[in-house]
Length: 479
Image (cartoon, rainbow, N blue to C red):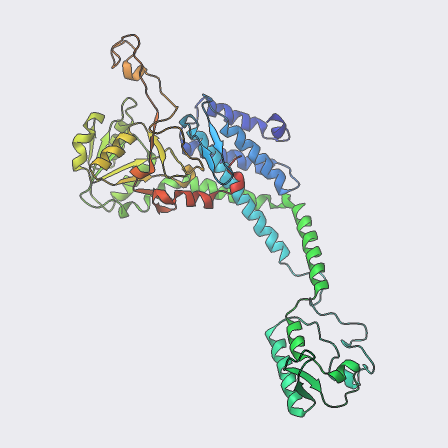
């Protein structure tokens, strides 16, 4: 790994970000994604590379280091060629966002390079001339006896002409054939194989021996649309040489590549606003919305919907972190009617709820997601009471991974102190041998989710894999 990053001038920036991720100094998928995009942009701006493959190798090496920045090392993966099957350990969930951004940037760099290469190849050749037509010395296209400027051979070719295929050429050849038949100089006779429709000359024309046997105008017409083999091979060689020359000048594309990364950064910065644009289409007047914890995406979503709709929000306090209290305070400060209830009141308030809304920490390719602890209980209660569940999230949280090992929660646990109490006055009672499990995230199966409201539109869980397919290249699934 060190050998891969040895030529990287931004190695110190990479090491600093890796340390901050391992120490959890950067919390939240969006913050991790923004830090990753800024780091890759600095690398592209200052790195020296001869070809685009060298740049992609540097970015891929940085992505591997960021993804491997795992505090606990609890990571298991099974990779398959057609799709990635990865155990999404939530101690890695924030690192999945870093990998997603790296894959997205690599895809955009490839697209920009291919577009620039296509534009370079489509430029007209530097040497003037029309492909498919070559004029021999002397200014005549025809050879044979009596082929001077004033001879009769100049009026009719003895061999099919290699001309550029076009509709005007086809009409001109058809017109010449009709005029010849009317004047009696050309008549339709059976060909050598007995096929009718072959034209022959009936008058002395002074042409060579082939002219006396007849001209196959059908073959001449077909020759119009058959590209000359020599010209095609020469064009292929020139195209390959031009592509190789363009590949050696990939460093000149830095401004375009930096602009493409800027688009990713702008998309990340406006994720909350983009998701909240369709809020009024999901929330109607007089509804009762249930949410839990504190999600800035959900908060922006509810505030945007309250501009056009009047509704009530019930917030679960989400013990032991009690993030719901901060969420309820922000919504109430905005003027939204808000009720803060303990987690134990979930089933009591669910019959009055019309919709469940919460955010996601990471979304897997099968449509499942990891969310704050307590989200699984909300989703199960909503399914029992037949309430729709809507998840608001950004596209950058869609990871090409499949959860294989965790049915309910995952391998990222908080300390048991807030649950059992530091003075043995909590739920554990201070007795020895009591094991307290305090997961940080819950895994929610795709069948418990009705809809994903994202910054790229609204999609059901069964369509998430298609969005991931369009956002990342298959060769970048495993960095």
